[in-house]
Image (tube, rainbow, N blue to C red; front, side):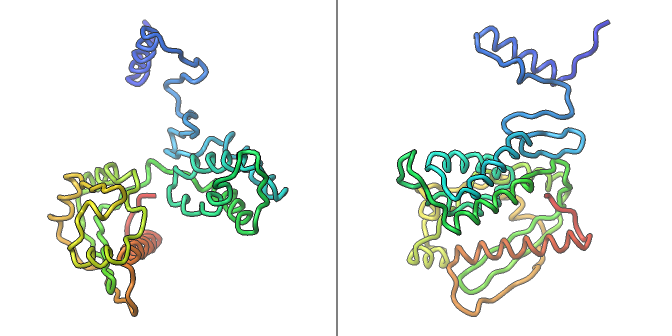
Amino acid sequence: SGELKSLGHARLDAALSAYDAAPLAVSPDKVFHDCDRASFWGITVHGRSGWVRPNPDRLWALVLVTSRIVQLGLCTAQLLESVVGSWLSIFLLRRRLLAAMDHVFAAARGLAPNAIIRLSPELSAELCSFVLLGPLAAVCLRAPVDPHVTATDASSTWQAAVRAPIPEPAASEGVRQCIQKGAWTRLLAEPAAWLREKGLLALELELPDSEVYSAPPLYIGLARYPSYSECWRREYRTRVHINIGELEAYLREERFAWERFARGDQPARL
């Protein structure tokens, strides 16, 4: 009798049959099934450990090229853009790492592809930081989920955080439905920030391109029904832009969450 196919293998065969019927080309060397480790889309998935990392062949080649650029102190605008695009694809695994990218965008802006760029000390330091941060761009799909929901908020004078226990299935689903696309990508102008603080700013004016954020039903329920208790509150000595206060409150609570995790008080989604 033939060996039973796994569900994934059966679905893959169905997809390949559909490709043949279309007809669409398939690269045989990119087809795999029933593996506990595989590389695709620039990443490597370790099925047994649950870790997702950048494809090492791509990562270490990029580290070598970036190090060589820093060593030379020169590169073309086209080469820099190519290197930056490659680092972007790696840092997307841990999106916080994208905050390290600043000078690389300004350096090649408005230049011809073959224009020569002499690296400034700031640009060289930024590229070196990519080399150090690259190996940290990894995600553990089996990291435990904290069975609590935490909310932070801020005005121009105060910031605070609250926290409530929730069932583990709800916490896991909350992680699954978390926002993947960044929306709050710029500071409000001062008049709009004042209106936002007073609750008078129209929703379509809070985000770029008149976008209105619509929270998933699960998050609406998590905001309304759990029994929250205050974690901390903090008053500013001087007035702070509301958007900056909101971000600071989030990062402050994130640090406290890590400290709780380090003490063993809670699990954490890594």
